[in-house]
Length: 373
Image (cartoon, rainbow, N blue to C red; front, side, top):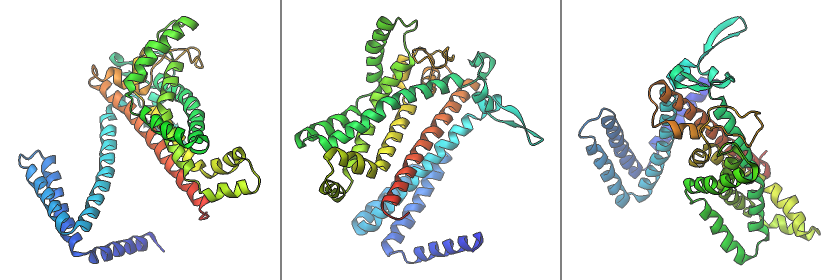
């Protein structure tokens, strides 16, 4: 079957679905979509009466909620889903448009297979010689920020991944009922503590300890940031991994115990492998939290736009992508602001890739465990 035939079949199926919609869905969906599009168009052009179609949209859904509750609920759920995708797309477009100037300034000439062309933004990632970040010269290399983000994320993962999985196993499989009722809400409460509080504790307590005990030359180090961010990512890893471990069917555990395996053998050989998709997703989400953490890194690090010397010096000081944006956006303008948006593009793409990767791993393992692959 050709691509054209496939597209035709899908269009025919969509038309058939629209024809068979019930009366309530047609009324609420049709009028609601009409008023919503009118509101967005009026808002985009800055019309003073943009609120009129918005009020009409609310009124249509209020009427539908009383007359066609099921159809209205389905329509609002659809609008919310589409709005999420549209907002995500608009954020991506806005980031790329605002960073276009910086990518153009940091383009690099490349010859490939006898063809020469400029690659926008390539010098941002390939320039490894100082100075890296000099707005007065329109030089915006991201090597120190990328390295700082990589090292702090690596340290945070080394802290959050093993401790998070171990904590999830303990809460789900080993802790008595009374302890589980206390530990699970307590761990989830940690996620509600503002990141600035973690950063302040790291700055006052851990930095002071490192300066006193290790005689560091600068106030702030990558290892302190990585440790603090790892602690911040722990609640995410523990919560998601615990849900995955708890979802393993009891029959699998009972069968292992019935064959003579100990509780520990059952946990390590049955429960953990069966929940590996959710556990992997939990670790990836924790890494995403570490990559995107801003305030803790900004408070602790000394905002040095140079690479550590040597590179593997985790006690050295540099800057991350998030702390770069947080520390400079207030004084940036022109190409410097565009370069900060370019750093935001790198962060956005990285976190998006981690989120998609976690969803793919979870879906793949679910298919395998479900016998569909």
